Length: 77
Image (cartoon, rainbow, N blue to C red; front, side):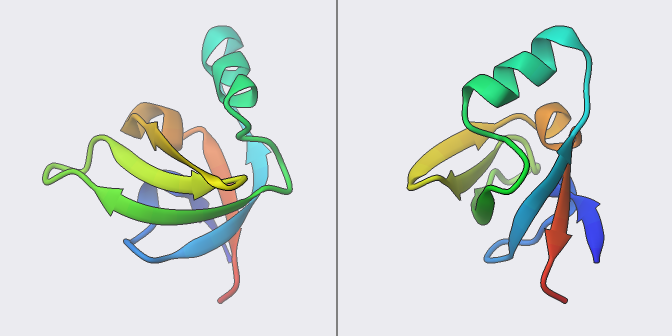
């Protein structure tokens, strides 16, 4: 099942299928290791849902909700 990283619930896992966005945002995500094929685990969400903390490639990464909306995920369900 496909959904955006911003729609994940705490504790959910998935694999990055595609990264959208324009110019700077897309480049920033790639520079942080957010690339297709990477496994992602959603660790925490702030009370209002922004930002979120994920584990990717063995480290913790904090993303804004607008950045997470650019990431299309494949879940195991």
